[in-house]
Length: 68
Image (cartoon, rainbow, N blue to C red; front, side, top):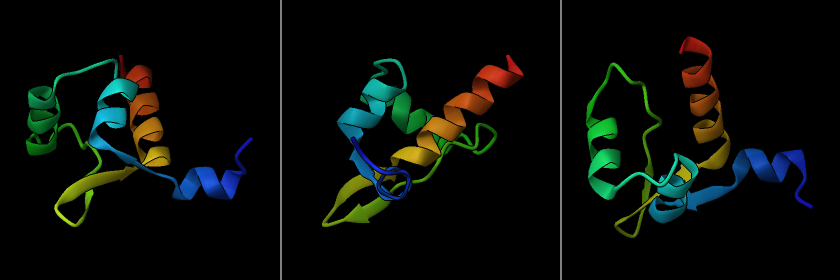
């Protein structure tokens, strides 16, 4: 079991991010990143690979379900 601190700091890659967002395609993720109105969390690049904070993705998904 992970602690709250570990969850807040946990970095996830593009594949896991897409899965967490409902199994979206890489192109959908690209479009979400480019659409500023969506407010999708921006990744951090580490050696040319994209990583997101899992907590930010979960919070974004929660906001989407609240506004629907």
